[in-house]
Image 1 (cartoon, rainbow, N blue to C red):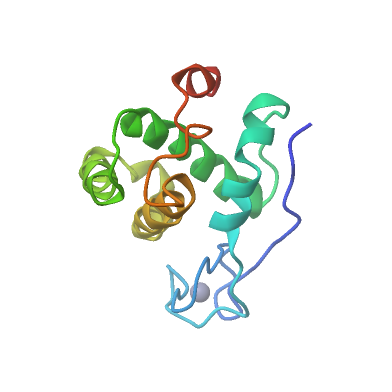
Image 2 (cartoon, helix red, strand yellow):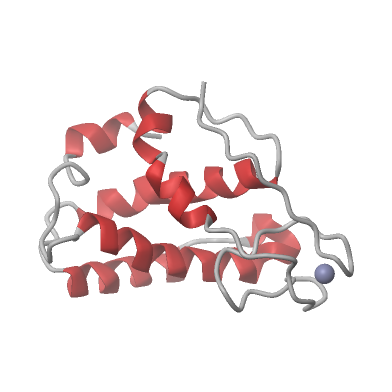
Length: 148
Ligand SMILES: [Zn+2]
């Protein structure tokens, strides 16, 4: 069983289901202010190892949709970071990777998910390079290969 984040949020103006994952994120459809901010990126990073090793990733609500994207992307990112020793270099590698990623499947959330993914780069590097150098727990290729 995967860790599920019980959270949902609809735009108070147009009803679009999305998550304002940090301050300053407005509705991707109509630009209205969200009712609240929710740190879905932090939640998804925290539950990453649990979900790839123990859990499955069924998709139910809006939070699962985000968690699925974030956790899949973490695996892609970690594969790119094996052997990268400097956090500044890690950021360059991942930002270059985002340029090649496709977000078309997210339709009207396309730009929103692209920005979230760029934000994920910063949050993930904070965790993986916590003390300025790579934490081997995150960058063990054997572990990463077990992920999706
Ligand atoms: Zn809206």
